[in-house]
Amino acid sequence: MILVNGDVCTQVAANDRGLSYGDGVFRTMLMQAGKVKNWSLHYAKLVDDCSKLALTCPDNDLFKKDISNLSSNENGVIKLMVTRGIGMRGYAVQSGMPVTRISMWSAMPQFEDKILHEGIRARWCQLRLSRQPVLAGVKHLNRLENVLARSEWQDADILEGLLMDESGNVICGTMSNVFVIKGRYLYTPDLSGCGIAGVTRARVLAGAESIGLMTKITVLSVADVLAADEVIVTNSVIGIWQIRSLAERRWEAGQFTPLIRAYLEMDND
Amino acid sequence: MILVNGDVCTQVAANDRGLSYGDGVFRTMLMQAGKVKNWSLHYAKLVDDCSKLALTCPDNDLFKKDISNLSSNENGVIKLMVTRGIGMRGYAVQSGMPVTRISMWSAMPQFEDKILHEGIRARWCQLRLSRQPVLAGVKHLNRLENVLARSEWQDADILEGLLMDESGNVICGTMSNVFVIKGRYLYTPDLSGCGIAGVTRARVLAGAESIGLMTKITVLSVADVLAADEVIVTNSVIGIWQIRSLAERRWEAGQFTPLIRAYLEMDND
View (spheres, each protein chain N blue to C red):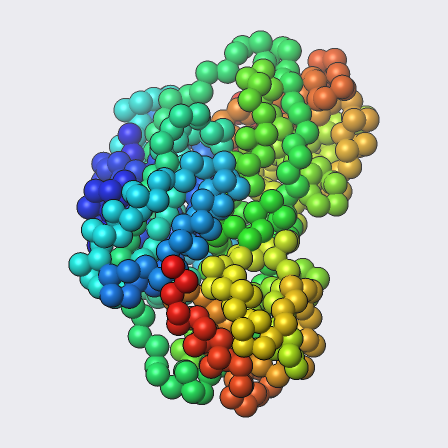
């Protein structure tokens, strides 16, 4: 089911700037028992991302109403998009044009239960993320790098690919944030040059202390990843997955992954 | 007027990957007397750009039919888009999904005649283009950098902004390619790291010799631009404009701009 500006509708204007230029932002969230998990954090991030593009973020109440109208399906994935709306030809932004608000429900993807015990296989992507400080961290609609990186493999047993920036530092997965645990430290890449600063990433950082980990946002090398005790990827739909196989490297089941998962399973709101 | 996959239609699916991820390419062309100028070059570029994203480019005949159906308006701007089509959630590309083909007509923008004699005012943009060799040169739908750069000024008398890469080298305008003329040389930036390699850029490079200019594709510094005899910007809609004012720098009317314009006015097809 799809709502466009609150109305049940499967289409958007062909001259919407979201399509023309990727001029907008989005969020993907988990709906459980008719409720969006961590809604307040997601909405705050949407407001923040909109402000980075000088977009007016629709009111919280409008999205809440959309979500309520979508929630006849109690469980699933909610995707929200905000675009700069319909535009004339050309990059210049016309003032006073209303944004387009798109809210979608889709079925929860089915991941095998064994992932929770056995972790996942991952790979290194060849594509290097470009550096753009003005857009870094924002979940905007210019996602060709993610598309191309995800196109690098077909093997259905490999569930994520890790991406580096041009300097060869590790930034994220194609659809996830990445963390490494070494001793009592939890490290995650600095995203001031590229990558998306996800809500689940923020929750992991916020919860680390409660499970006995100190956190560092840092430059993360491939060697750091390979030397880690545990490597994990997170997003709002998958939660947390431990990488147990990455190219030639193998890891045993980590002690912290289940603790972080238990922390994430609490709803923050 | 808009055609979507050949049908008169003003909308596209809200889950089209063109909207979700900017997963597609586009072209903007001039239609004169019902005919698209330099169509063969534009179509060849569309095929090339599609191949860079592993998109199947629709047949030439399909676009020709679209253009014929749009050409009841004899003069104007034709915009063509090819997206990866409707997609499920997630970055992975499903094989066998048909692309979405969008063809639009819009009225020719009205530029003042005096531009041809007096040139234009331009400015430097603050935003630095990111470096992404895999996508450089391609006119894809991830155009947030262009949008943000064009948002840096409101003054309607300034018709273009010039953009640099992270190293401070000059790459392009927000909607144009840039050239500088110094002596008998025509220089234009190397676009292997960022920027769009436009059809009009290719035509200028091809025609330079016939008007007595040697060409060099090179790294172009701000100092090179400021020291130039003539600085010009080109695209398929505006043709060629001489920059006569750029921040503090002023130029007299150049001798080569009218010659290049005359060359460009010939249809290559």
